[in-house]
Picture 1: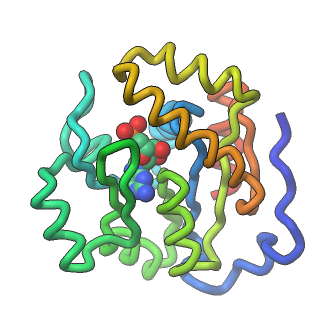
Picture 2: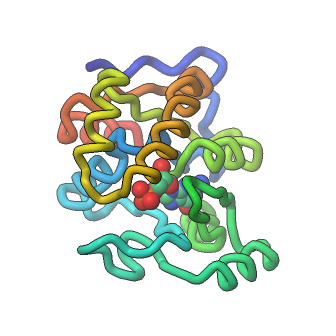
Length: 198
Ligand code: 5GP
């Protein structure tokens, strides 16, 4: 699998100079393996700074508050939205997710790289706010493979899987909105490509 080169208008050179140029946004359909790629990066490149999102979803077995996510109630999430505490936020498959604004802004103001792993609606909001950021789309090797991974994960019930697949159809179609496409054929390889881009 090959990372496509950035287009001329959205290419790397056009991004340099602004603090937001150090921001990389990783998006892609649910089930494509964004989480596995990010876990791989955490394991082998602990110096890579990853934003910890806030969510109203319940923790899955093995997830720790403050590590994979900050888990909050709907009321707390709504309060954070009202206080403009999010850089972006979205509803996905019945739960809310958001990127806390301050930690990301601090990193970028210090000239340091930052990585966000978010779904498509959120990526679009970040592009509105920070068009100089780099937008990376993690694509599945095929639609059949995406379906297999979502079902095989075994962490969601049938209704949730259906909703995530529906969202996935729209998300796969959005690939062309991104600067770079990385195909997640092998997690280690995809992680390596992403780190090289940071
Ligand atoms: P999951 O529930 O499987 O952890 O995440 C569901 C989806 O929400 C994934 O596509 C994930 O990338 C996305 N997501 C995680 N954190 C955020 C966030 O802060 N903002 C947005 N917009 N999406 C997020």
